[in-house]
Image (cartoon, rainbow, N blue to C red; front, side, top):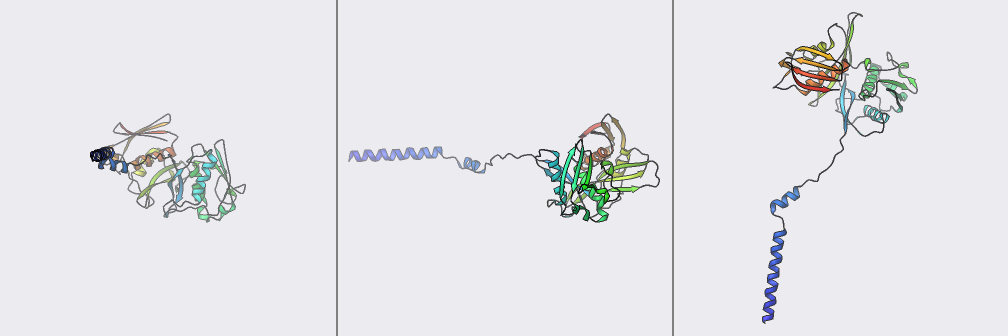
Length: 306
């Protein structure tokens, strides 16, 4: 009997110790919740953002973002750009690709800054009124690659200017995009590029407009005047630059441009990103500079590098 009671006490004591150990080891409700809510760390591969140019309802080419993967060479990157120009399902429905869908890119060659694209004859089925637009869309999309200085566009090994009018053998940025002519004389013609904004599905897109004008004014002043104007030639385009904004002075030194504005460029104490980039893009396309410094009343506010 005594032996049985002793065994019973030992068993109860052992069970008690086990239960106490389990209570001690088990996490509290708070700790348990923390562990359940812990999100495993995931490493993402950062993709570079590139740009292509698609057409809006007003037949203007709009700059659209797309993700650039990793490529062994420029030819591979160009192929992806052209594929996105032919078919881009991720773009807003209001924008359209103007390269005919059956078009094939037969060959790509890049050497010494010159890109040669050889397309199938399907590209020739584009409507005549869009022939120049298709050249602008292709060339300015690939010009986003800094190493490319000029483009030759071929159709089955023959230059496309055999079929399309007014296209040079070798296309550079001087060819222009979304061209607008306001010329009254053949003397003193200036080419000025101004970037406006096109709002699509509550998102702002940049639209470059190349103007050919009879104006002896300095290009940077023309750019600011156009962006701060209450009147823009195309109703679907806009600028967020305050109409009271004045360019007090500017300076070009080496490859840098300093801009000095009055306080009207501020909105709630800041300069809008859209304002910074419409001005910067316009200047980079109109001048051979690589850096722009924004000053307000002689105080440095922002620096932008090409």
